[in-house]
Image (tube, rainbow, N blue to C red; front, side, top):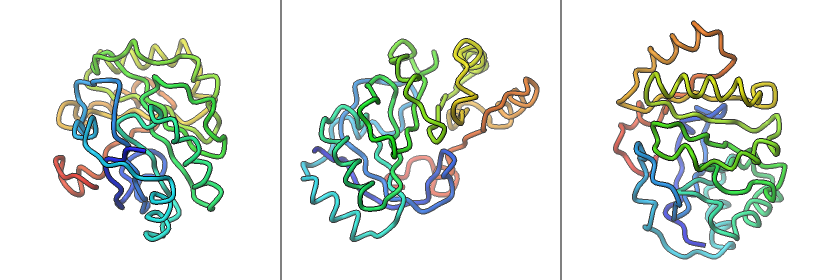
Length: 211
């Protein structure tokens, strides 16, 4: 598997925000979102065996592991790695851009599935069938760059009633949409969603890698 980086940090997003976490960032992505903050993961990385990855996770010793990218599900060995981590007693989060099939992922894992808004430039790339495989523990994330993105996301939820199925996250694009504006819109519309800010950017700064 080609791995961009393995590091530890405070989880900055999702319902696990604020807890220590091991991040395994896989190399490669099939999308090019306008606001991407990890472009280095498109190609940077080194080949590691499954056992080398597991050994590094064991050495670090934290329970929560997130596999991210790039797009981790482009690498066909990732589902097996997920199973091995789960069998070792880890809590495994998988952040995916929504374009790849999630049905083969072990149901013990927690999927954080992106829905690409128009502001990303990639809104046509989601595999809608993935919504059928979401579990109550999974999370659906909308990264929102503007009022137009917000309204698009709100309408998506009305068309696809997934709020009753799993947690929904609305995340403002850092430096582009003020979280105060997004929080106000959510409250005004009485949306049953969670405001998701990138804590790592407030703690370590927006350009710091490995956090």
